[in-house]
Image 1 (spheres, rainbow, N blue to C red):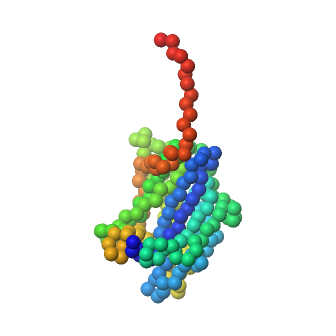
Image 2 (image 1 turned 120 degrees about the vertical axis):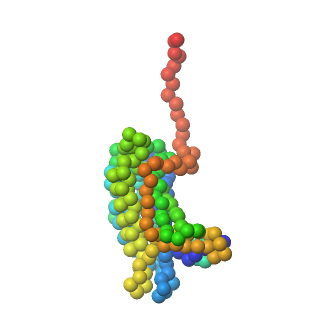
Image 3 (image 1 turned 45 degrees about the vertical axis):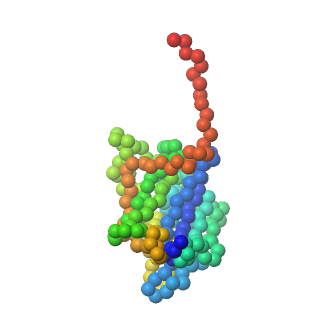
Length: 222
């Protein structure tokens, strides 16, 4: 299926002491008006490491949220990977990003970050889910506006830092993208801004690995 050329990053990790894993992805441009030659070979691995560290290595994320690796792929016009992926393992990082927050929700709870473009139609919206949020909910069972804004700042800085880690030709910068396969050649739009909701979302697949155990009361003598 036809897809606009782009670069895809996938960030992966685990919830420590559980069988659960998490991942989220983001897409960036690899072409400019001047050239279309940018590949994963032009990505600064240490800069992406630092971006992940800045995002996750703090008390906004639970202490069992830890990065295991990240990967970058050159996606060609047929929607398939071109060349080899760039794979960066945690063991190769100067410091492994790990949350330090004391609050833990079930592992299927996540915070949705919506990537918004300007024009209506395909690729106007995209999204990714941040794992292991570690902020107490307000009395209305939502994140407070202050806490949501804090995650918004973290996510914005993270996307911009990953973009800056891509060495584009001349003076151009890589752009965060929304990608759609709708239409003859697919569609792409540059992300204009992002938004963070105050209501936590569920990712059902994470619950499939957790082993249920019960504690029993014993006979109740009514």
